[in-house]
Image 1 (cartoon, rainbow, N blue to C red):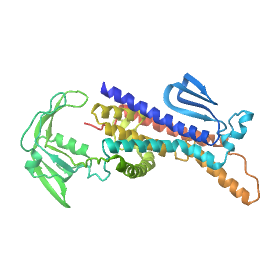
Image 2 (image 1 turned 60 degrees about the horizontal axis):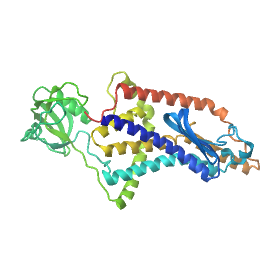
Image 3 (image 1 turned 120 degrees about the vertical axis):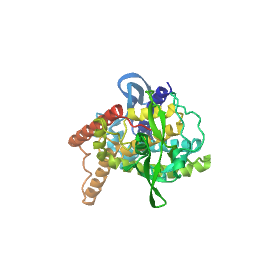
Image 4 (image 1 turned 90 degrees about the horizontal axis):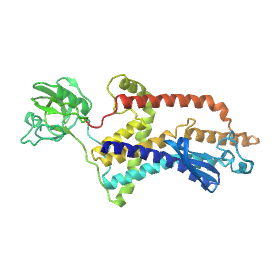
Length: 400
């Protein structure tokens, strides 16, 4: 039940983020004297609408985004004669840029606000985390109940008995190379008797024999339990840092800057992730660094809500807003960045014409850009379908 509520809540938050993105465009257009004819949340059949001033506001049946209809966004738009002077394509360059950047800025503002809330309520995660296979807290090995709870245990576990220490970085399990905690955990659980860890300790490579303890573990989806090997060790992890209200603002600003850089790096790597997504769809292991769809993100939201990890819920939502803002910067139509590129091109072209004593050129003919626009839509749509398929068939699992 909690999972379903978290799933729906996260999907609703995504819809609100997209709606506020469009509000950014609308408010910027109204502030610069342009006419906003319609503002709707969703697509498809109209559920209801009302008129306020010169703008029709409403809700449509499919909550899959929203749109803001500004009079004369391009020279191809039909526009009433009395509104011709307010047409967006006839406005000064700075005004058009402010309108197009308004939506992008709204997503970054939302992300920043969410980061501030995270900093005060739960703390900001650190980016300087230890290696993925670094060993952390060690303890005895507890048996697990069917409901997922652990039974009491005492003493020290196999990891401590073998002489392993917190901070050791495991590079191989019984000769099998491991690079992620999931690989370390899986390789350890598969062992049926004494085996060896290859570790890096303070720059030295050591081989340490370990005798695991057999225990029963139950999957989170409620399936049957299975007997696996365990050594009583968790991954090393630096706890988030909490801030008071005043300190949260600069800390959140620095964190937002780091998030922006990482988001742009992720965008640059998106074409490389096609093969990884296809591998996930065709039965291979899902790379946790691959993109997720709205469904996949909502599923993650449901899982974090189910476990009471609201800080992670907010962090994922903030990350999504940063991604939406950064994605819209791309100079591709029909994205905001594509329209920004057109505006900048017209300004440069007209400046050069002015140097030559020529009148400004005509607005860019969007009909000539349709083939490129359709290509971007088709490729983007195919990528989204592939990502959705991966999220349905082989979703990213934050929790074992």
